[in-house]
Image (tube, rainbow, N blue to C red; front, side, top):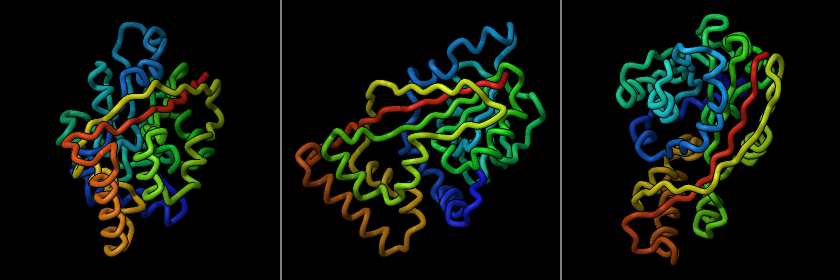
Length: 256
């Protein structure tokens, strides 16, 4: 990640200060989504292990899923504090400080390059060109984005408290993927849930960049409002475990 706008850059770097809490409450990525991103890819590289880079890796939620699939994985992030948390949560994965526009990786060195919740920070022209440089011929870019399912009334109310950057939502809906990458495709998974305690839902709200970068008084106001919502909404009041519903939208493109 390397946002060129100073405000975006501050938001991108805001997660490191709360890295451990971020890792504890943010959702993982469903198998269905990763199946689709990887579909048909292994056959093009023979018997050797697939080489993958998780860019904008954060604390390693997606990195861990790639390791579980037996891939040879490296992780790249702009924030050293997030990479330090990744070392705790996903030990043994090599990490590098860098961004999609300036990848600290050799030419044609990976078969798969993924970004989870991160392409909206990237300059799509520069990022696509740099991803194309790092991917081996026939390699693939995969973008994954977890989105809360706002068909649930309480989730829609939560979103109204947190989604203060509509321009980011627009960029997520239609990410630009440029040359030399081709053949962009999109797929949305079926609905799935991430179970959290009420206070973990508050922690999820606190992990949003708009909340992390807000003034302390505004942070308290937002988080108190989230607690009030959870305590009073009929779908969440009195529950020890709250299923937070998500869908995951994925995009994939290839280097010829």
